[in-house]
Amino acid sequence: MSILETLTTNCIIPEMYRLMSKEELEARVIEIKEKFGRRLFIPGHHYQKDEVIQFADATGDSLKLAQLSAENTEAEFIVFCGVHFMAETADILTNVNQKVFLPDMRAGCSMADMADIRQTERAWEKLQTTFADTILPLTYVNSTAAIKAFVGSKGGATVTSSNAETMVKWAFEQKERILFLPDQHLGRNTAADLGVGLDEMAVWNPIDEKLEYEGDFAKIKVILWKGHCSVHENFTVQNIIEIRNNYPSMKIIVHPECRREVVELADEAGSTSYIIKAIENAKPGSEWAIGTEMNLVNRLIKNHPEKHIISLNPHMCPCLTMNRIDLPHLVWSLDALEDNNGHNLIKVDETIARNAKLALERMLENL
Image (cartoon, rainbow, N blue to C red; front, side, top):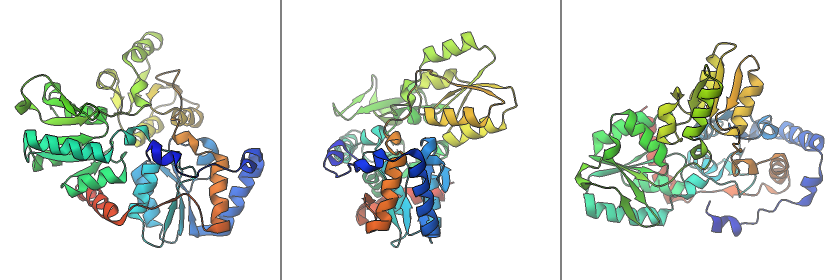
């Protein structure tokens, strides 16, 4: 959701929910979940607070949760504990009898908002003038429904951090070049791991509306949108140097949304699910510095006391927009289901949903 849309949305939580005790709020969630039974499904993203995740019927990344929402056809109400683009994906994949709600409409994603649809359409027009019909667009699932729809309408597909390599390979089978939205770091890391040279990658600056590249444009194979995750970009080479100095035997594992130089220096890099599995499968007594969102790192620390786990950046904060979903907002959202059939409904325009689904389906067909 854009800043303007957020400001014009009535999303102020009533004060009564702020005044309720933790025990009262938790009891209310339990009461409503028991009342609605299988008619209610609460998916919770890995980066959610523990106070919320404890009530999730399923945890996972955004695509997995959207797919699980669609599979739960008995669930009339999906209260998505994540951010706006995740709830949009759930609405796209669920059937017409299911309604998706977001507990706090301010829970957006700075990365997703870095690729505005109007900017993208202008960029595409200019890139077509330069490169003609040689580009296929790919978008990270961490993007708005409008961007997914744009990509779908141009023959492209979505990618996740787990399958990005597979989808980039597929894209190069279709066209000579790719435009990768909206996270430049995931695009750069994926392409580099597949053997594309950094000198074959350009960055599209949507503010200045120009390519950031020195050299012959004919050499460009990957055009990276100038966007990033505000959390993962804060892990630095200096963080890695400090870990190597202070904990020589500690392994460093990071998310591929981190900068290229950080990923290159880490011992391992992978999606959120990859990181979770790596820690789960690690030997007792092993040492890990993790470069991803702080709520998840803290949960891994709590769940694996037999291992020494720290954040790669000791000063890292949790994802601020993801953390807008808290226990009071969850209870407010659930109360609204009981009182008036819900508020903060996420409904994607039919045309946008249709084209966005094309992009999602092309990805799923190639996995």
